[in-house]
Length: 61
Image 1: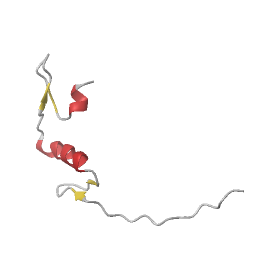
Image 2 (image 1 turned 30 degrees about the horizontal axis):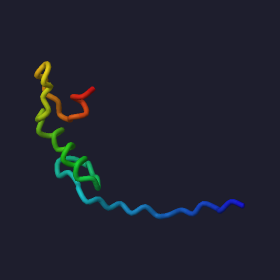
Image 3 (image 1 turned 90 degrees about the vertical axis):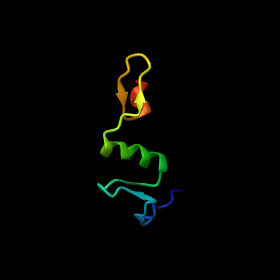
Image 4 (image 1 turned 180 degrees about the vertical axis):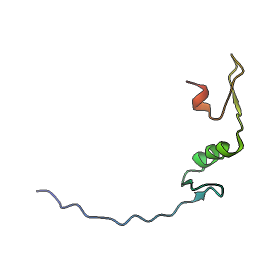
């Protein structure tokens, strides 16, 4: 026996929304990381080559 799938309405509400673009999220960490796209800041610096990165994950690649 299989149950019929039921459509659940999607409610579009987000805790964080960017005032400069249409980015929206419920995750505060993702929102903080997104803010760097507008400032151009590169707060993560490689200890080996001194190159700056906007996210820690990009630096660790």
